[in-house]
Image (tube, rainbow, N blue to C red; front, top):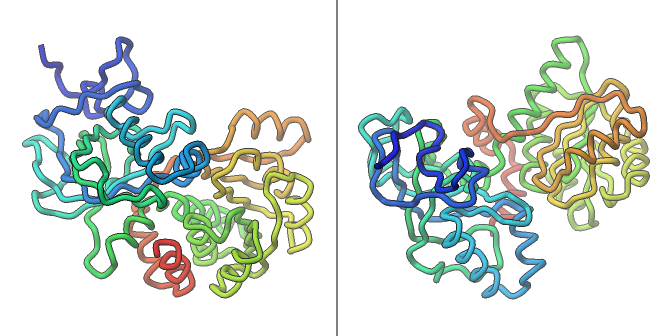
Length: 346
């Protein structure tokens, strides 16, 4: 008996217990659609940074990374790194739309999915033959399925596809950063904002969003001299500091030397162990936004308690209404952001 469809995708879960697709061990990837689903012909995957870094570190050789991704998708019916738990997103063309789909998509539209690959039924049909395993962006031929409560955005015509994909992969970060900064403004405060990983995709957009929302002083935290030179040249931060975010005292002191502590600290790095430093770099009563999938939220909570830090900690869940359009507009309006993204994609 075929189960009735559920907008969350529960009907695609093959586990014995009742779990949502993101938590499932395996998903049903049949091509046939339930009435509220949409099938996408996949053009490119974008692996999230934490997942790709882990795969590269474990397997090294690009061919081995490619084989690992193929094995994960074949086994689980979705792309969910078993170590990091994270996935990424994709772009493709709408192939079929169920008669009850609420997503407002039409056959033939080129779209980016704004939900994680960790909950998206996915079939790879070309063996990833066009991918060398050395980059986060993965040329791919196959299909994916969206549910009634999935999210997708039509790709803009004025931007290269790879650039749009890179932006939409992290579009939740700038939208939530802007919301938090505006909330400070509503209280008459122009906050100091520190972005850890300010030279990366989500970090550069977060800096631009904070500026647009009324932040007073922007601090970009990077790991290397090369990143510092690139971020400084982009003009996105008032101060740029170089430190290892896994060193809590070093991070605290670096942010302090650049005009901190920060009222708002945004964590955009894809390595574990940055929780303590982010808390220490934040002023009493301030806010820490965690956007890294490498974050240990127990370490963040217990670490803040252990140093008696009165900070609000937010988990960036990747969705804010209007987040894709907002991030793309930041890219269009800010030459520094566009330069950093273009360098990253190339």
